[in-house]
Length: 401
Image (tube, rainbow, N blue to C red):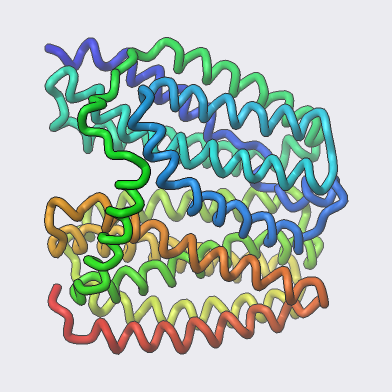
C-alpha cells in the first residue's frame, strides 16, 4: 500500500518536530532574560513584538511556502531557529535577545505554515489524503510530547548546568533535526495555483468583509480570541509571579508542565467525548471562570506564599484547559457556517484575532511596568475583559448552534 512508503518520511518529520519542540529555556525564560540584564517588563514587551512580527509576516510567509517547496521552507525555519540559539549562545544583552525573538517569530510562523501543508501534499502524492487527520494528530502529539518533556526537566537542567550548556544542547538537537528534514521526500509546489502576494492581501481584506457580515461566526470568533489572549496573558504571568514569590526554580517547570499537560488532556477529552457538545452555555461558564482567574492573579501578586500560589496557579491552568476545549468546539462549529471558498481566510482571521489582542496587551504592559504599576495593568485588562466579554455574551445570545 502507498502509505507504507509514506511512513518513513513522516517519521523523520515527527522526529525533527519533536526535537524542535524541546525548548529547554521555555520554563525559565524569565530567568534567562534576567541573566541578560532584562526583567519581566522586557519579557512582556518582547512577547508583544513576537506576536506583532507573527501577524505582519503571516501572509508573506504563506506566499513563500507556496512558491518554494515545503521541505525547503521547513529546513529554512529550522536554520532560522538555529541562528537564534547560536546568537544567544555567543552573545548577551538587550538587542541580542530582541533580535532573537524577532527571528524566532519568523521561524515559528514558517514552520507552522509549512508543516500541515507538507503533510497534506505528501499524503496526496500517495493518494492517502484521507489519512490527514490521523497523521496531523501524530504530529501534534510529538510537538506536545517535546514541550511536555522540556517543561518537566528544563528548570532542573537550568539549575544543574546553566543556560549556556542548555543552549549548546539545543544547538545539537536543532542540527540533528535539520539532518532529519533533509531525509524527507521533497514535494514540489503546484505553482500554477499560487496567488501573488498582492492577491493574498486582497483576498484577506475580502475575507475580513465576509467574516464581518457573517453574524453566525464573527461574535464567537471575537469571544474565542478574547479568551485565548487572556490565557496567553495568564500563562506569561506565571513566571513573574513565581519570581516575586521566590518560588524554587524547579517549580517553574512544574507549573509549565501542568499548563501544557492539562491543555493536552483537554484536547484529548474534547476530541473523544465533547466534540458534539454545545458551546452556548460553556461561554457563560468561562466568562465567570476568567473573572475568577483574574482574582487569583490579584491574590498571587499580593500574597506571595509559594505553596498557596502554586495551588492557585494550578487552578488557572485548569481554566486555561477548559478554554482550549471551548476553542476546539468553536472552530468545529465555525466550519458549519463558512462557505468553502472562504474557509482558509476565515480560519486565518480566527487565528490572528487573539494575536492582535495579545499585541495590545503586551505593548500596554510596557507603559505600566515602566512605572512599576504591575497591579494596575491587570486591573485595566480585568475591566476590559468584563466589559468586552459581557458585550460578546449578549451578542452571541440566541445565535444558532
